[in-house]
Every structure is written in structure tokens, then in C-alpha cells.
Image (tube, rainbow, N blue to C red; front, top):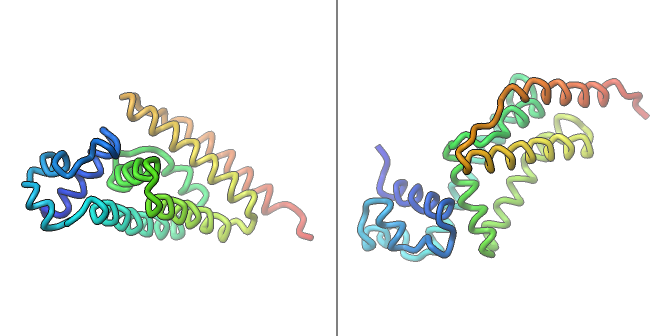
Length: 183
């Protein structure tokens, strides 16, 4: 069972993603969460504190994702590509919501998204030992995620059969890098 605080954060994330920052008013969030405005204000005395709590949630969710990526049995690169799809998870919903805050000019949201992106890139770089290769794989995954997000919001599902082909390309890129003569 979720707490009122969690329901409010879920409602805020949904309001941001669906309606945008300008329409994600305290009143609209309270109504979505099924609480009174006073109940919302009890947990989050201001809209800034609500935004900060959502950013904190994203940091925690992303930390768990970075850990899973770092410890993936098939390696961080394959993991990143395999998980670069919008799956309507709490991480996905929170990332989209914080991105909407970033689009509205929220400096904390921008800093959080940049830090998380840097963490994903760092894990790839650590695993592969080549920053350019790590960036290439990250950009492929980011492109997959962007495409999946656009498809999900238009009611379409992404085609997962493309994954094996992309994973084979990733394996070749990693293999070429491993097989390359070392200076």
C-alpha cells in the first residue's frame, strides 16, 4: 500500500508528463492523488519542495539502475541497450516528469538529469576502457529510449526483435575494441 506522500509524488509525475509543468498545479496534483490541498501541503509545503522530492526520487531510482547496470551478468553495454526502452516503470515515469521540469527551466532537474546521464556513461567507460566507445553505446541506447518514448506516448509498442541485431552490433563493437592492438 502506498503512502499519501508516494501517491502525491506519483500524481505530480503523471501531471507533469501528461499536462506539463504549467498545468501541474498543487490543486491538480491533489485531485489526482485523491487528497485535499491541505493534505498535499502537509507533505510538501511548496511546489518547489514537491519538485525537489521528485528529483530525489529520480536520483534514488537511477542509483539502483546504475547498480544493476554495473552488475549485469551480460555486461553494462548489453544491459544498457536491452533496457533502453520505455517500459512505463517508476524510473521511466519519474525520468519523463523530471525532464518536463528541466524543459520548464528547473536548474535542479537539469543537474539531476545530467548527473544521471554521466553516471550511466561512467559505468560504460569503466567497463569498456574507451570513452568514445562508451559514448557511442550510450548514444545508441539514448536513441532507442527516445524512439520508444515517442512510440509509447503515441500508443504504439516498440519492436523488440530489433534488440538481438543491435546487441550483435554492440558485441562486434566491443569485440573490435578488445581485439584492437594495444599501444
